[in-house]
Length: 217
Image (cartoon, rainbow, N blue to C red; front, side):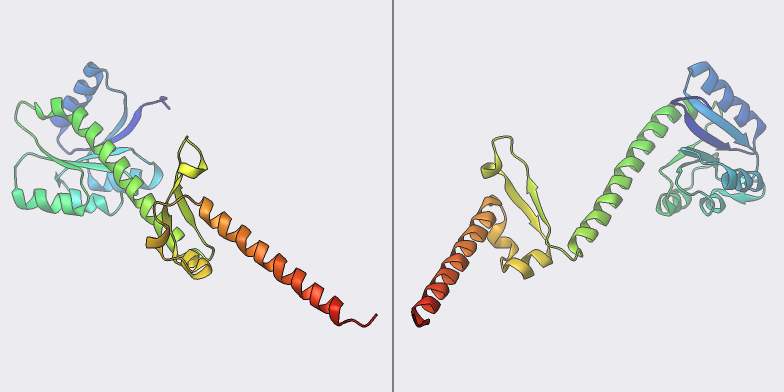
């Protein structure tokens, strides 16, 4: 296993294209730990055993198409290559989940843009994954059984910290609507708690005082 190398799977049924890919990667010094297969059947087999960062697949394979590959790719970035430009296929490829669609030219100059394509695709996938995690976190917070407050931290101190989010349970427990607390320091919540404690202590004091007055000596 090569450290810091991208694990790349090339699915290509054309022997010349396979050799061109290997030569380009080796001569360019790209940090690709690559494997090459010639058919959908081989791709299906290896994808059940190994995980790849990037899968580069020709659209037309001897025993299937790139769309057959998608059903067996778990969490890899997929880039499709094809010898014929077809706008309908390109649109379908992007909708299916391909991160890019490259047209192979006779001189195989498309390989020169492959490293940038791979890099951009991985960046896009990372951004997409972060968005998914954020949506999951937002959903978890929104449906939490306890009050949740999210604040924007300030190095100037807690008095300059702002509330940027509260969930439904917070509103139910405190009685404050989101619009009433947004942009405020969470300090006011502690001040309210202190005031209520003082009121409760005062009430208990007066109740005790009244009981003592009523008790016969």
